[in-house]
View 1: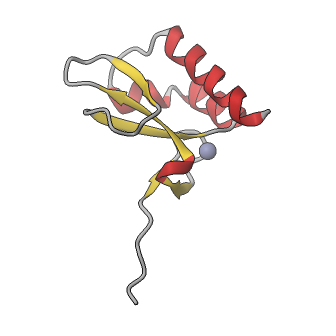
View 2: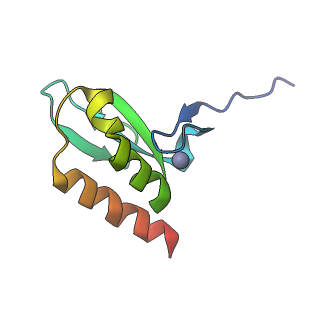
Length: 90
Ligand SMILES: [Zn+2]
């Protein structure tokens, strides 16, 4: 029996590797639009973050998203992330 490999991705907050499906994906579309990808199927370059308020705080502080996508990240994206994470933390 071959063991199935679980795709791992790095969280932009804590820099730890986690299984992809345990993280929230943020994606930049080919049109340079940043959005949350809750389905994991949107095309474009992706960044991943844990469903933890602490990781989001860290990512905001270090501006990791701005650097990953080399563009400004609007406040709406952070608000959307915050809401998404709150759902999981309850
Ligand atoms: Zn994290």
